[in-house]
Length: 156
Ligand code: UDP
Ligand code: MG
View: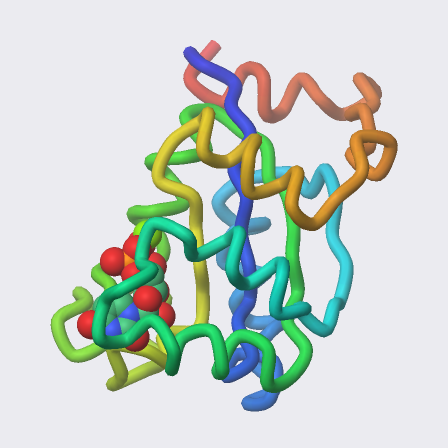
């Protein structure tokens, strides 16, 4: 079992629609643990760093405008195979194609205003978390209840 950390954002549409609690609950109910979380107003610089890979694409300018338009939550989640598990919970990019049961499949109809961002790899998650958090803002998990996550693959 690979204990991983992933970086997640609840985008401005999610926050403005008052869905942040509901969406966060999806991750928590699955068994993922919060390592860091805060409400931010994303700067142009942060948006440019976050979405560098999409620079030049048709939707890039609109994406940066959207992400800097209103507050969003940024967070780091930890759990078994957190990167792929969270991507599965989030669903396909376009809400119209996303499977029912996924966050995007249940709450949206848009390709751009798709509620959530989730990192697509462990290394990428580290880079993205570094855009929004100082290292000391990532809280070291306490072991008091940590066994629940660490043993989540085992039936015994
Ligand atoms: N996006 C968009 N139009 C598109 C494709 C992507 O507005 O046709 C936005 C959307 O908000 C998406 C983000 O750009 O979440 C990053 O795109 P990516 O392909 O990385 O999708 P994701 O990894 O978020 O599923
Ligand atoms: Mg992506």
